[in-house]
Length: 378
Length: 98
Image (cartoon, rainbow over all chains, first blue to last red; front, top):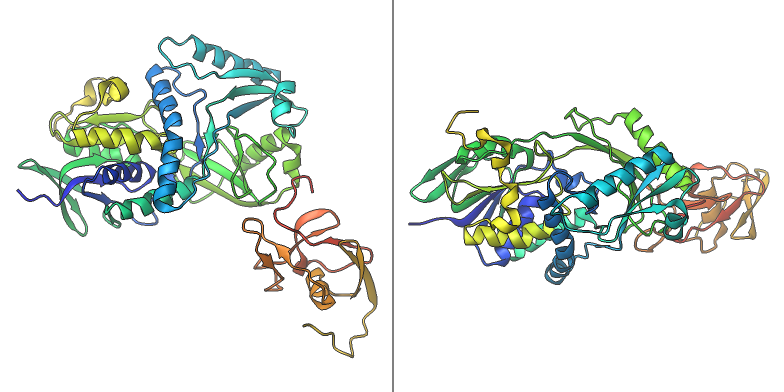
């Protein structure tokens, strides 16, 4: 039987391209079906942290999966550099969450304690530091900083260049990137999947749904379930300045090219075409209380983006029981988890089995009875 | 490369460029004064360090970035000179505290 591709990956964002790159790396023939340039795309609207601290409260397996990703990132960055010549500027020397005032410090301390007490979670050495201890590592903090949490595994990367490197690498591996092909239907016929797009049908032996929030509508086409609850976030970007911030923070980081990114807002609305200046003002105010020098810098951009987010905030990886060979993958932290997607998920898709030890906890079965719907049940 | 026209008899204004005195004319922008000086006033860009001079002279291209009276990343083409103004040719990124 003729099949056009070993695997069709639906979605060419950071997650889809990481998996497709990983599949291409393993010698598979792969098609990536993507929307166009104006798609809402978290791959171009993210904060670029490779982040461990505070991940996994309520789901210890997510802590382990995140630590594994953090540890795999060095290899990923090196392989992308070797293959494409692009340096994704990975920096993993630890990161901070800073607090302003004593109340925030106490709250953060309680979170750290809860994380430490969680049974079954990997220990990633997150610790609370006093303001004076923070100042030794971040000399430019202001007097309102009461301290913060530090995790030595945390880091950041140039996520736009990572995205580009995956796409450059995919091409070198012979992966077919097919834009302007949103998938409207998926049928399974005689052991192959047929994916309908405005530019014709694509046939593949396996399919990986990696379309972010759109997975919610795609998953039921192959007997899968991906309940998503996206939110909006905003970012403020300053002009380039000399390196002053040796570690990334949850809310402030300096890019490898010198700009300062500020932000961690969360809004319910899902229109990413406007910016709420009241929200930007709060973020900028907090940032300059953390680093008073920032007050002198000009803001050159502010933007909003839509987060990919499952209903409980944790990743979803599943293979369909009704249609084996159909996989779904969605997560909020497409930057942090990129190494796992490129190496582990690609390997599992190739093998045809999701490794229960690594990703069994992330099945959508955790959401309850609605996980195995028949056609048309929602 | 640039030469002032002979009939230009606007009042003289003295500015300092990297500490050295430079005679400009009232109404000059910082960028035009720098270009007219004939000195090497090339800045270095923030990422690659490539040498640049003012280009569009109308506030669009940002190739005229310069430190004026201690404030980095000013657009020299939009700022008129003033007596005693201190100009520093900016080499690379703006400093965080200036």
